[in-house]
Each structure stands twice: as structure tokens, then as C-alpha cells.
Image (cartoon, rainbow, N blue to C red; front, side, top):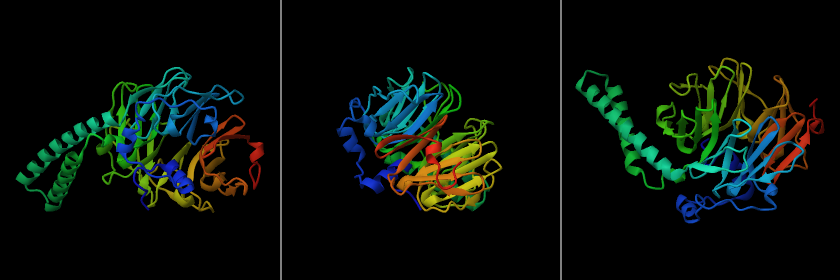
Length: 385
């Protein structure tokens, strides 16, 4: 199953629940969401939030209309941050007590250097169009040289046909670029593995890379094993500095050398994967209709796990060293202990949960009606101990 165009995992839930219209890039430009600051609102805590991240006790929520909330501890009040855009923010990655990155629709990349209180826009879809053009021009030039050399030599016809097809595809994409092409691309996740090296991923196979702490960005989406341009939904890394990416149509890939080369993850699945978690040498990826997969060999092979549910799984975090809490559509709360699943969802709580983060004994979730907090003990139901 292929996702709707430019829909990330959270907006799939929102569209299902609210039947929101899909706006065009030109509408967003007309509304100045890239240049007008997010409005302050006393009811901001009840907004739609799509992701939460934490660093020690510090927490940051990101969501619709450019709303970002920050607090320094689980018992402190949320403060609405100063954000220079009104576009939807889909993901956040906190680096330390001062620096964090956030990404969103219309190709937006934001940065804070004061712990999340104030954000600056360092990149948007207008700049993305330029990167796409440069990358495609280089790709066309390289493929032209390869094709001409192959045509002049004695190469297999299948190889020649493949090079010609790749060249035609790159040329078509280059010709099809418009000034607003980049604004039509939403970013879905951001990950910095060092203060200098970071990746941003999103719709239509978009992938940006920085090697200098975000001072400049390169478009590398055409250099990874994703020829169909499937949406890229989630990033994670492990203790060995491997970076993993999952996305639409069961797509998975990994790099062990900061993006210099990538390998495909052979996940036998045609639906979308919305997240991937690491626990020691184990990997777990999850997505549409309760599908979940496990790997014990850094993604070389995968086993399908029977979760016992058909709800979309949007997010997960570790309750402890062994138990993974998964959340998703219809208020799904599912605990996996490495062997069995316990569905601890409550019939009275059917609102989609978009993300979850465990902070000491607190379980913080985000969704269509803001954020919620509970203790681990309050989740006890159906086998959670």
C-alpha cells in the first residue's frame, strides 16, 4: 500500500480523524506561513501535536500552525516558544540543553540555541528547490557521461537500457522543476548523530545532509537506494553509529559511514513503516495496520511479529530495558516484552496518539487533543508490570 502524496505518519492519522483538506503549495505561499510567526495562544496545550523529544528533564512538543511548547521538567509549566513560521512542525531532535532542530511542512528546518524558547528558520522549501536543481543537474551530467561511454563500448543492452531510463527520468524531473517544487515537500524526521552531522528526510524520497552543524545543506535523496522516490518517514541510530531509515512501501535502508554509502534493508512488506527503534543489537520497525518487524542482525534479515492489532502504529519508546510501549491510531497502547504483546488500550480513550516519550516514571503522549501524562503504574492493565 502506498501512502497519499506528501502525507507523513501523523497526518495520515489526522486526515482519518478530521478529514482535513489537502492544501496546495500555492495556498501555503499565499497564506505566508513561511514568513509569519506562529501566533501565541492560551489554549496552545490543546493543539494537535505530532512529536515530543526530551533531553534529560527538558521536553519539547511540536505540532500544527508552528506551535512549539517547551518545559524544563515534568512538573513545570509548558511555555509556548517563539517560532518564525506557521507551517506544521512534524519532528524535533534535541541535541543538548541548548540546541535542538525541528522540521516540518513546506521544507522547513528550524533551530534553537536557547533550549527551545526561541527558534530561527535556517531553511525552507524555496531553498530546497535550488538544491533539487543542483542535484539533478549533476545527476544528468554524470548519467550522460556513463551512457555515452556505455554506448561507445560493448556493454550489455540491458545495462544500456537501464542507464537510458535513469537519464530520461532525471532529465524529466529537472524539466519539471518549478519555483514552488520544494514547498510541496514536507519533512518528516530529523536526526543529528554528532553536533556537525545531521540528516533530514521526508516526502518523495527527500533527504538532506549537513556536515557542518546545519550551516549548509546538500540534497542527497538521489544518492540512496530509493529509485521510486518513496516517502521517508523515520530515522534512528544505534550504539555503533549505524543510521537506519524506514518509509513508504516497506522501504528500509542503513548507513554505517555517515551517508557515504547506503544498503537496503530487506523488509518483506509493501505497506508504510512509520518508525524504527533500537534495543542493543535488536531493531524493531512498525507501521500500517499493526504491522511490526524485528531484526537481530542490523537489518540484514527481518521477522514479522504478530501484534494482534490492526491499528496503525505511529510511535514507540522503551518503558525499561525489555518492554517497548507502542502507540497509535484509536488510542492504541501496546506493550511488547520481546516475546508477547499486551494490549493496554482503554475503551474510553480512542483519540489517535501521535508520539510517546518515557521520562523517568512518566509517560508523555501527544495527539489530536494536545498532550497527556501518566505514570507507568497508571498504565497497568492487561499485563504491564
